[in-house]
Image 1 (cartoon, rainbow, N blue to C red):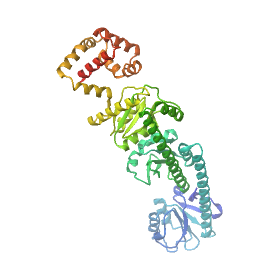
Image 2 (image 1 turned 45 degrees about the vertical axis):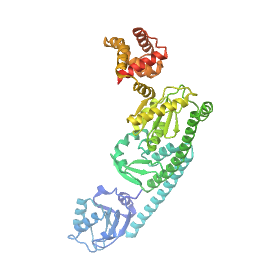
Image 3 (image 1 turned 30 degrees about the vertical axis):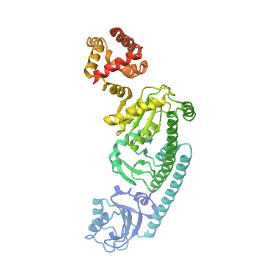
Length: 489
């Protein structure tokens, strides 16, 4: 810690006496500069303790002299007495008190060189302590980075070393690591600064904290955000720079690992598409420890490559691998398993169009992939975020049917259900639609409707009772689907 005016005044051998602005004694001393110039501003950088005997000063010139020192950013003034002046000019003391410039009276017995040596020793000790702290911090960060801590460990260690809070953000501005966890709350306060940051470093404030935002040297643009109570000192700056370098290296290596895994995922998708289901699923289990339980709805997502990569990043970050498996197949990102979450992420990213197949077995994956890609192309043509193949296929068939005949058929078949619903005794039309959309899967459909599966079974049984049709028959289900599609046009 830099030597302050207060600490210097406390060194009794120097015999310094505070004459003005005692409230400013906590200022650090950058260096000592003796001069008898009445205007030394051109030779000062700010932060100095200026020493003078006042050779060219008197009661009339002292006030302006003090104001010039304040303009130059001087930390304090040491006035030597017993030579040009027996005491510090009163006008100098009064003006210094007014403008807040601390003034020491230096006794005749204390040479200026003694003060210079005291400050020099303190500066050297401070620089050594800063060097030791920097080296120790760099070692601790490096050990953490090469150990098991990874980027998260580096972030937590950095927060301790600078006694502050740290956020690690990905290219989309999302928090990937935070220390402490409550630091996530600070993200909203720096969003505007993040939008202005292109590369390098930006310094801002959040409440009483000074916040440094620094981009990482990676292909996938990330940002390190460090908040501390007051500005970082030199050691803190070196430690943050070390963390930036280590995180850049770690994330770049991790990025290469992710790219390799995604290429492997895409290869497994190709194996499935070519009918090698057993080999593909066995490899999935070996590498990822699990495979989504078939039958699989297949989701195909098309759109700009950058948007598809963003979707892949979001799937990696937010969806467990045992629930959704994904990979690239041509110009499509293909996902299978619990794909509802993947579809929601795709709609959130924007610029993407998704198609969803009927649930298929592992051996029928090629057919499911064809359905999903056809539906995705339809979604792209319609500028829709999602099209289900069942809806797409139904619309295609409807184009071949006379509209008046189709409407009459729909009204006739659905009339008993609508009459039942109008009495307020149930929601047969909505329940039948959802059940057919989920291909007769009771659990999925009941969850989507928010009712118990037994309630859904009773409603479907009521449909069969009112219409006199056997819903276990695929042909009857197709007729109902056609009727519902016509009703929805």
